[in-house]
Length: 136
Image (cartoon, rainbow, N blue to C red; front, side, top):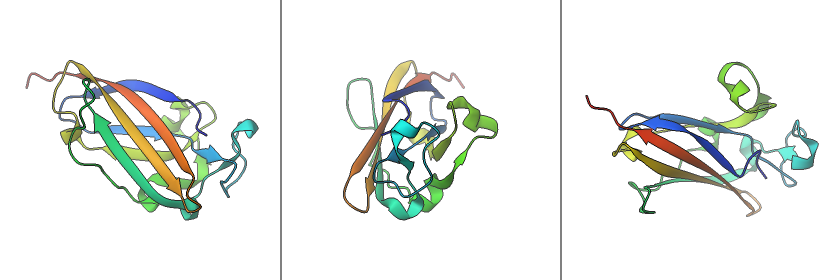
């Protein structure tokens, strides 16, 4: 379970975008989520793999699938300071999607993250990002 089914935001053509979320599950081994009905926060040790795919407006994958590590994306404790305030009650996942995944402006791209836990359960999250065109 995550805070929202689909996050929305903006990105710029050929410029990386930072995405954040809160991943929790009944299978998580971390502290209870700030929203107790979500279960426990996942921790790095709970994660077997992470897959990130970006799709264009016509549902064509942009580039190859990305596989960031849990150590570089998952926080074992809830984060609430600074930009984490963009998620009510904080988050525990942050990833910088490379700008090469947003080669065309004036469109909307879909970023899909699927975290597979060590027990095989999958936790998906989706971002719908309006990609603004850069003229320079």
